[in-house]
Amino acid sequence: MATESLPGIGTLDTRGRRLNELRLSIVDRCNYRCPYCMPADQIDEKRDFLSPSQRMSADEIELLVRAFVRVGITKLRLTGGEPLLRKDLPTLIRRLAAIEQLEDLALTTNGSLLTAQAGALREAGLHRLTVSMDSLDPRQFAALSGGRGRLDEVLAGVDAAVDAGFASLRINCVIQRGVNEDQILPLSEHFRGTPHVLRFIEYMDVGTLNDWTPQAVVSAAEVRERIAQHYPMIPLSGGVDGTTASRYAYTDGQGEIGFVASVSEPFCSDCGRARVAANGEMYTCLFASSGVDLLTPMRGGADEQALAQRIAAIWSGRQDRYSELRGAAQARALPVRVQMYTVGG
Image 1 (cartoon, one colour):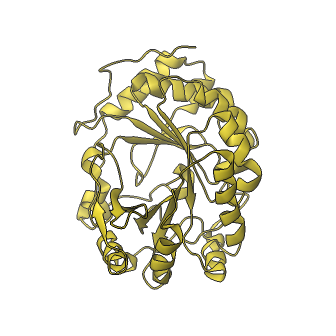
Image 2 (cartoon, one colour):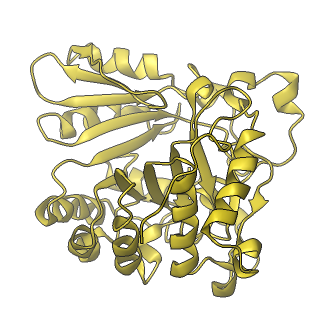
């Protein structure tokens, strides 16, 4: 089914930022309990997760994505929780990959289930994979996953993805001061000389469960300097508006590396990303305190056109720029923020 666009209807927010990317959580559950996202001591399995009837079905997800395409998105990233826990994932990806206007269909995973699923994901039409990996030390890796993760499973998953045809993966690492700073160089060395792109992401105050403090942030500039002392690099040009990572190449030709300075160098000014949780709530910022329900209208009979108009209206009123205000009175006055595992980071 072709999806017509709605040019000019709500595609720009109040600051002139165009909606071009959707990050869609397809399940809120996860098999890890990473302290900066879903700390085990603050999660109640019965209280804090959606029931199957509260999550969007595959039909509803496809309808929603087609509505977002009408408003102008060309990039879709599937997130969780852990998206590989969704049992109908290959079928869902196949349906989404058939939407011609989507230029990029990606998925973020912790990688623990990739060995068994990488082939099916590739065959279904998934374009790209991002794997989270915060340490190459097995004990530290286990601790950073809340005692549930095994490094060897994730590394095997990366290999399985390559074997399945994903030529280059993104490997995301969040560095916390006093926690895993010692992994900056080992991770850099491990992925140098491979087609994969390691990206260091500054530790952010997403949600309210991780006891974030500014002192725990290791800036992208500091990480970059530590690596450059051993492996010089040069900046790469050719980025596009809305790109979160600053791209660098090793001067000896051993690949690319990226840095996401979301705290020290906010990129709110050209952020065109909307987020939708697994229950159909739309959030216009990763640090939003509330979302807008899109599932109820869908279950009430709203069609693609009506949903697109609702999405456009929400986006046109968007004013968010939390990272630019972080630490200011406006940001401190915000009520409880949405949790990372709800909207997938």
